Length: 345
Image 1 (tube, rainbow, N blue to C red):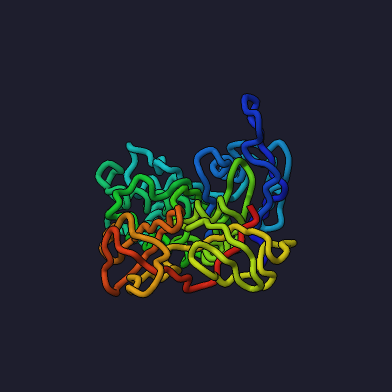
Image 2: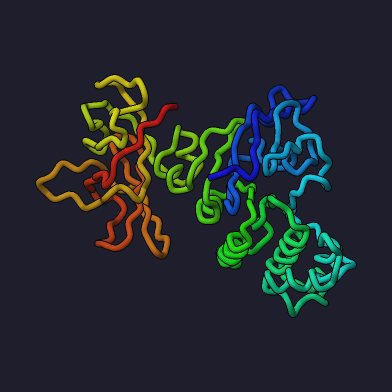
């Protein structure tokens, strides 16, 4: 995949901060790719977006768009569009006029074409306060598309939408963005949003890029305990390496890596593992079996159940779809249905 946008060793430290907001950040964005920057508040993701857009100057590093360095260019000369969290629509302009304002040629026909592209061709005469949150978001996207940018940046694009509309709007907007062929970087703190919306996910913490890769790969093979815990629910357990397996409170669990542990890990060493709740099987213990744990809490989640199990003092989460329902206090047997991920930290 050739890089549409390249960030090389970006650094930004604000005068009143003891550490950099962004430290030595490098990544590439491909044409037509959607990349999510995800992390807790203050991790540097919005500062990264602002540096790409030109609203904040890096202390070090370079930004290249389509092979051209744009690090020192003002925002209006970068060829990068940005949709803000509040959409930043002009309240005194209609939807069509908002899009026309952003269009490269400032022509009404261009505005109408892009409104039709986002499914709002019949609503061009409405003002922003006459549109729903999802419709306002589409107008903001149409305005960005009309400017003909090489890359569009989205800052928490779905945070202002009601929960009932969020999932549907995500699907619709993703289809629009993929059809446009434009490179997209969006910032979010919502792990479900990142996994469902992005082609690749970049996890940040304290200004550092901890891991980047396809969403399913980062979820299935997190680099460390922070990534494992931040990008979805997981069980972090320790165990003793025994060949290709690890002895844990769940019994013998196969290890995902062929090296039987993190790089440099010797056999018989203790390792920390990540096991997602949906990769653990649970059943009631038979009278002739020694149970591995007891259920302390059952959460009914509609499409599935989450069991909280006390295993020798360790709290284990298990997600189950279908099968016999178990009850609180019941003695159970647990087993890993897939290999565990050894973590480096």
